[in-house]
Image (cartoon, rainbow, N blue to C red; front, side, top):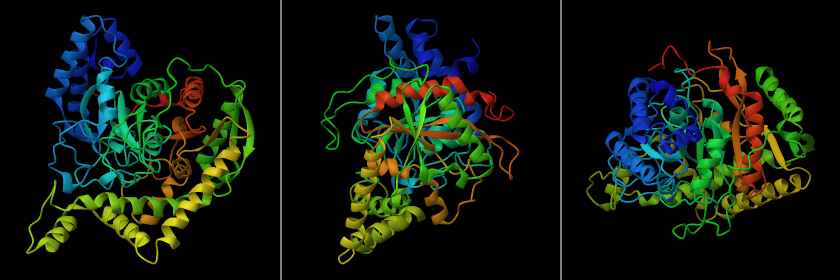
Length: 497
């Protein structure tokens, strides 16, 4: 069997073939490593490739299968965002301050995927400490969009999204704080799924904003996202924010149509505001939802416009607190100084990039004496209003459909001012603030005026809190009926092994 045929299989198909002994996990891993060697010089999805460890994991999975086990993700290649710990591997957060840090333990979500038979191929690039919407803020490498190497893959989980899109992994593990799984999913033509806050353990995820961070998978199909979610979800005593409630299995509840579902169309997210090709794609997506049997209903999120300013007070405030630990004393980079204060200043000045410093300054100011009530407390009150709007909307619908992004992948440097970059998360931030499950699924292609390649874009679907089964059950019907991802291959002239 040709290596390309193997790596282009879905995670579900790979696991089925390994468990049926049609292929071995070792063969699958070797084919994936060959693919990485052939294309990652162009794509730059990985900061660290764990070839030796991956082959050892694959051999262990083959022994499990030979012994009669049937792991749910047997032999499935996995890209792990480099802000999640994997014991014995470099875990950098895309930052110079952790460039040489070796994780002493493995994150719970990662370990659960490994327990299910997945094979960690490597650690994927990301915006530094997950702060960004394009993957341009990494201090350690450049990741390119597999559909146009002159454009960004989205962020902050850009490496994981690019790895899945370029067939360098079947599952990419990302983290979503304000849209960092869903937006790169949209930009890279894959599914990006953010579960409810507290549903997947954050233990071993290096914190950016603790009340917002959530681990989620990037995959080529919704079914694969469901398989990954089923493996990861559940209570973890090591995470104080983990929710102790039963997990409903999702992978066996995938629907063929949307009959009986009411899908809310948000008045404040009118596609007319996007215009041109973007409006055409999203209006066509609404029509496809109707064609599949959904009833479209109008809903309103009156506080949606406050999402971005609310987020950019809460997230930097929590970032300021969480990143205080990187001081040159306990781990990571240390730059010598004449005294402790000088060492702190030198270490953090050299170790953090511009965007991380910017958010630390914003957050420190918002938490400072005299400003805490005016900024941070007020933002938390606005967050409550946003969550209340969603509750009222879901009283009249089962799911909400809206854009995942306001534009397709843009060229490197096109959003160089912070304000333009922050607005990239306009459509994804409200769901993050409310803690709701949401995903981006490919919904069409646009050809921007400044490009020659058609670029993917995603439709965002959102469900009530802990309604993952509903969301993951419905989304496959749309993906299977439309098959948007199959319209174009990722730059075959550049990305052919």
